Image (cartoon, rainbow, N blue to C red; front, side, top):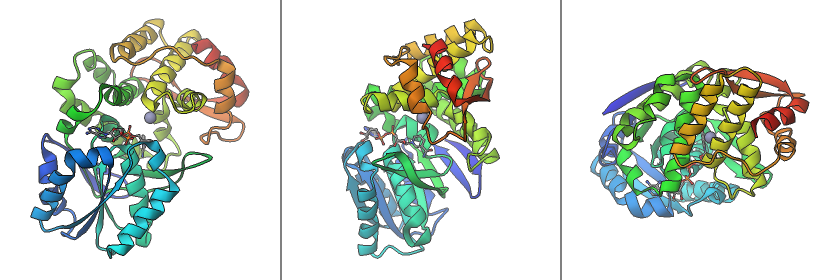
Length: 349
Ligand SMILES: NC(=O)c1ccc[n+]([C@@H]2O[C@H](COP(=O)([O-])OP(=O)(O)OC[C@H]3O[C@@H](n4cnc5c(N)ncnc54)[C@H](O)[C@@H]3O)[C@@H](O)[C@H]2O)c1
Ligand SMILES: [Zn+2]
């Protein structure tokens, strides 16, 4: 069992252990009085893990209600948000009760935003079941839903009271969704953890618990310094300016993880071309991404990507903060005028 303590506006533990889902009741009861639990999950995870979570919570004295959404990003919607709030109201969930998110990032983001806003905020516990959710979305307190105009346009910073990661649940993930999560794992290595990057050259599954802990520590360290995303937290956007544009160009046919993989290759190649990153580090980054069956070439032109990046919500005035690797484990924020983004992407394609 591994525990990482997060000290943001709220202190909480991220606990990583095989089979921990069966102890969710007992562990939750240590941070919140057994209460009425509103569990949000999706139709895939529901069939796989709901009974174990419900059994464990009931065994510890929680009363449970389960709300199931369809799997997929389209469920992170205003409609499901309102439906879930109405569901909680109909079940008489009160201020002293708690939302449990059982699933990937879609469930976590929607459940977190509902928990943040229902009765102006009730308890919230995350039980992430994808690699991406374990290493990224369940830690750090960003919650959101999508609007037709774009992803994550409505949300709140709302920290959970506890995060329980059960690496065994990763065994039921499709290889595609698992490797999407690997892109974010590799990202932490490139940002500021050369040792993690090197460990990833060995097979990931035998060391998955350590790797998850390592990534959570990395995210925790960044979030502790900059919870509200005004400074160093932007480092977590490595590869993401291009990735968001790639996802959009593909009409969201290209998954986030694959787009991040392409985005990291583009920015490292560009950094090497600009003389900021050693060429061999760029080569190493590309090779590792390939080893994880993630794509390293992008089908879109620099001008299309730059056009979309220019209206990215992360833009501030006339410039965009790109995250540039100056070498593996040494990435920095690099503000560039919007007009220069195209030529930087061009160097990376
Ligand atoms: N809040 C944050 O800081 C943050 C950070 C990164 C990403 N996100 C958000 O996270 C979302 C993506 O998360 P995701 O990749 O986990 O997607 P997801 O929640 O859609 O899960 C991917 C798929 O895996 C299935 N699944 C989940 N767990 C499973 C399991 N154990 N076994 C079998 N199938 C399982 C789901 O049903 C779904 O079909 C996006 O909406 C993104 O915006 C949020
Ligand atoms: Zn990401």
